Amino acid sequence: MVEFQIQPDSEIPASTQLFNQIRFAIASRQFPPGHRLPSTRQLAMQTGLHRNTISKVYRQLEDEEFVDARAGAGIFVRAQGDEGGASGNRSPILAQYPLAYKLVQKSLDDLLNQGCTLSHARELFLAEIDWRLRCSARVLVTAPGYDIGAGQLMVRELQEALQIPVQLVPLEELSVVLDQARGGTVVTSRYFIGAAEAIAAPKSVRVIPVDIYDYSKEFKLLKSLPKDTTIGFVSLSSGILRAAEVIIHSLRGDELLIMTAQTDDDYKLKAIVRNAQIVVCDQASNTAVKAAIQAARDDIIRPPKVECCENYIGEKSINLLKRELGLE
Image (cartoon, rainbow, N blue to C red):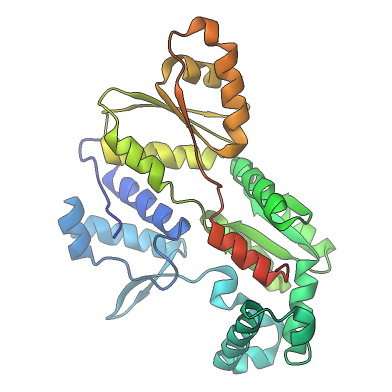
């Protein structure tokens, strides 16, 4: 069970702290699609927040299409991208028989899991297979321009895992690129899925959300650090750095001094390696962090310990993409 912690004396509003923690739990798949969020009463007991504050956070999550409120049932994580059947707009018959189409999808996945190739399944599910083959011809990763580093992380890992070309497209340019493309699959983080779907769905292009790494190992480390420890975070993604600051502050308040830097910010990176006892970084930033430590070795008594995170994209998401693209 995910535990949420709030620093009541923080300058960051309690609602912002809770919103960021729940959004991270959804993006990292700790709260998967269909998961029922705790009731306002349960969260009030866990966090000490007023139920009105929690209701406000839930309304914000609903407004941004991360969750759905079901009368009398509760708040549930919204299915996103291809999970929610967005591909169903390709033909009117799919809207007429949504349950039948879901059965076709599940049957195809079962065949693939049993070793059946797309070619062998083509005679049984010709329309579905043709569509998947067209989509697999082009994989587009998208992220907003203000956090294009998150897109760079996804492209780096997907190209290595899938062994196919992957194109990075800023979210602001996605509509134009899709107009020029004959087909393809859009991949993005759950943080950006709503905006990507709004652009791709009208063009009959599917969007597949990927789960990000849950950072459970790093959170465990953070909880154990002595008070007044200086910890540095380095990443390609400005969004990850912002989320880390808010969530860690929610966990530890002012007990830890947090410094952040993107990989290409030499000034901040040098400050981190000179002052932090521990540096947490993603794999794409690891080389830059080690180079900065080596360059500053004559100026520091004890170099910081470096904790390199696992891949930005969860392994299950990689395997799902391989299956969806017919690469297994």
